Image 1: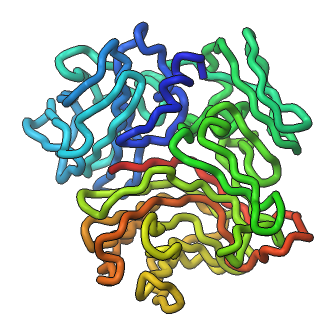
Image 2: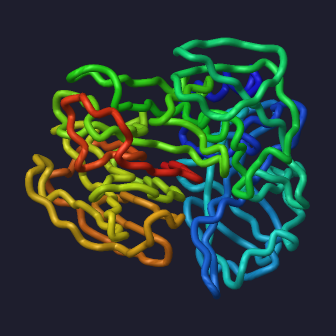
Length: 414
């Protein structure tokens, strides 16, 4: 990530879109603003996609109007208002209109048919021409921006360089940044992720902290969003898969945890807390490749009140995707409805949404809704995403990896 984009990424976001750096770190003054189509789900007759706007102009946007041709009929939309019919005109919703320079906002829609990027065109943002991306790559196959590769060291460190170097993930903790970058579409995987850079160079992690299973009793290691954005890695717990660019999170069998937790984890925690008003959505594309029994890949957690989850999205060793839903804000009693089934190691998309008192869970084409217990009323919350193995202990000792979760896409919208 170049230095200017790094500075932008370290400020808070109203809408966080954690996607490939090709869409998030374009040179602000030199390139047009972009819209990036990021598929949430696809079927034989329809698909759902997020659209991430990146403001590459020279001034902040207090509101936005996005126009583009799609080549098919839109059935429904969210986090926005829509008029017209191919070209479609989208305007911001009530909470995502402001976009600072270098920052992002997102909306989305469900359309008929199958997605065809060749039919996209005629894009403008607030009347100015924009660049259309699909999973971080410009339509037509060209890369929209440069990417940064970084080499790792044998210990935690921070360094800068005027040139670009690349290597695969190391077995030690490292943090690096670069003041220059080079275009490299050949090193990007089919998912739009670069397998030769740390997770913080493929995903915008500035709005998260990372808890690791390393550290000491009651005091696990925690990395800040700035450290993640700078290129932190800690294999085998947090690194980039060199075969496909996925962000890999591995949990130790017997690691360290905070005093209030029974299990160690490798987990991202949103640093912003929010009320239940409006729509709050966590979306991801993941593959659980190793799990002894069941692990939590996403949570809605109380930001005020008791330090307990509202719900946890879990994947079992038999491929069941289930929701642990707390009966009260004190914890200790919960239900465990099944949402869907996936084969171990299979990539799938999910979303976890809280709007008012309604919890909506989507896994692939399956959608289920639940009502939040009244004991949670008036509280604020935040999202978590990662690998929280429910069989891992918290006493240290066996630091070998027992569970592995791979993230291919991750985004938050409020």
